[in-house]
Each structure stands twice: as C-alpha cells, then as structure tokens.
Length: 132
Image (cartoon, rainbow, N blue to C red; front, side, top):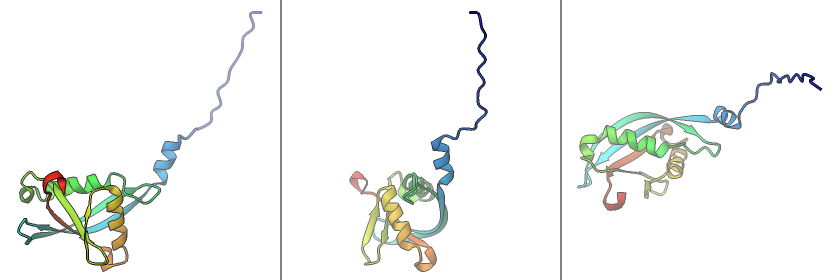
C-alpha cells in the first residue's frame, strides 16, 4: 500500500513506415524537348528543359503529370492564351499519343530511355473542349 512504481521508457528510435518509404524513393532526371504547335498545325516554338521526377515504387512519377503541366503552362503562357495545354508524343509506331495522367507520362518517359540519347520529345498544343 502506498508503494511507488517507476516506469522507465525505452530509448529506442522508432522509424515511421512513411519516412522509410520516402527515403527509398528514387528520382528520374529527364531532358525534354517541347515544341508548341499552333491550332493551324505549325510548330511555332521549340524549347528544351530539364525535369526531375520523384518516383514511386512502381517507377511512376509522383504528381509528375501536374508538375509537367504547371511548367508548360508557365513556359507557353502567351501561346496558350488561357487555354489548358495538351501534351502528346510519337510512339514507336509513329502514332500521336496524348498524355493525361502520371501513368501515361511514365510510359512516355520509359519509352524514350535508350532512344535519341534519352531525350523525350513532346508536342504541346491548346486543348479543345473537355481538355483534349
């Protein structure tokens, strides 16, 4: 009765799984050549930029699509005249492929690895109704 209980906390460092996952993520540096195509089909301007994407465990850029779109909105602000950019690339068969998500961006980036010195080539134009 009336005894004192002493509790000693262990001085153990506990790492949150979230922190561990964050530390294991890798990054991908990419050189992108971007051509702006006007509504009449003429390539008006070509620019070169370097982007760094943080990748998830599936090697898909995390928020890479939005990061790229934000960069392109700023780069071609006058050309877009308030419209959203539409980004596409030519695949191995020569088809124009539109990019609308991180997964599609990832596919495009991986397709260019090992070809043309790893330089990714995108065409940007103003999006039509519905963003496409």
